[in-house]
Amino acid sequence: MGSLVQANKNAAVATVAEAPAQYLTFSLGGEMFGLGILNVKEIIEYGNLTEIPMMPTFIRGVINLRGSVVPVIDLAARFNGQPTAVGRRTCIVIVEVPDEDARHDIGIIVDAVSEVLEIPGSEIEPPPSFGAKIRADFIFGMGKVNGKFVILLNIDNVLSIEEIAMLTAADGGAADAATPPGAH
Image (tube, rainbow, N blue to C red):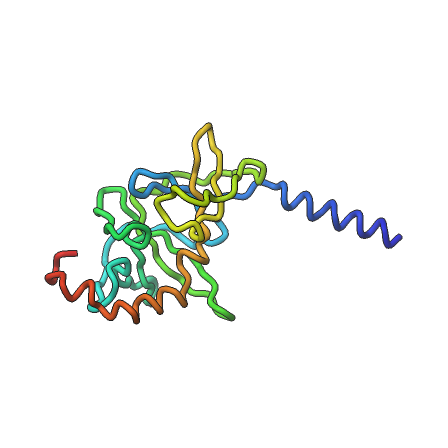
């Protein structure tokens, strides 16, 4: 009986590992990215952003989301230092990230949201060790969709509360201090 229970547990684990996961896909700087749909709370139109002085360039400001203050991160600036040029389809994706015992809502600016895709585990390659335009620890894997790759983000690393706080403290606004007001 014990071996039957163990066999059923193994079958359940295998089924979960093989089940396709859903990813919200979006474009950013001409590349297609995806993040696990379970991290996404909502997608809102870009606007009503309040800038915060003395912050690193990748922290664009905060928004008021139904009475809650939500920080907004510019993913393009976080990845390569170049801020996102706001366009007609630019939007903010609200994601939930863990921080020890709590969960925080953070907005990320993307060029345009595409669609929700199911990508089976068998179609996800490990992240490249070099050659990517972003840090390897930011990449969960490379999803193959219709012969093209979608960069699947490890959102816990990209939006690490500890790392962002450390970068904010280390920057001390030095990058923004050299930038004239309103030049963002």
